[in-house]
Length: 188
Picture 1 (cartoon, helix red, strand yellow):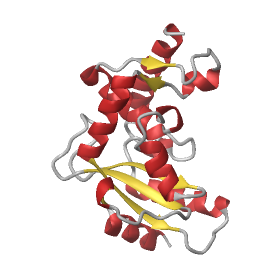
Picture 2: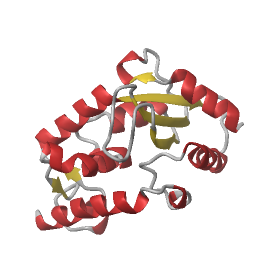
Picture 3: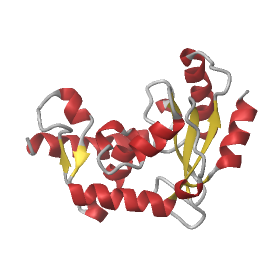
Picture 4: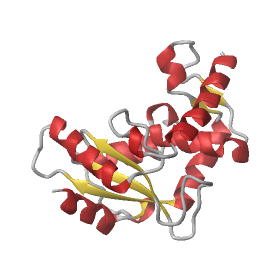
């Protein structure tokens, strides 16, 4: 199954705006840098940055959360990219809903202009590919497949507790995200 998932992800990988009929079924997706894009030490051209799972709808997860200016608080990908690009874009982190709740601070967001810059950067620099679960596989099995894909592709923005140990940049990314969390606390 791993080979089929990887083949599908690579075969469907393109600019988010080039996907005409983005699937509304569950599946596994991967974000990669475009051919001429870089992300500091976290990525060189064509590098897989992030692998995720869509429990209900690939379209809702990828378009509704990851590429939405108001969804950093619901997107690990956006929080990680923002932490890496924080200085370059002068991003300011805030608690997701303005409270000092641990969950809302862990799921921080950025200032409005920063959110727009982040989305623009993503549109200019990322491609996304996916594998559709057309067989209604149990969510626990999908998570196992996701873990296999992460182990194989070794995305540099992976912080999943199950697979983080395979990411040599996880500690550096954790530190950058901690800076954002500390700023979110300071801005309450």
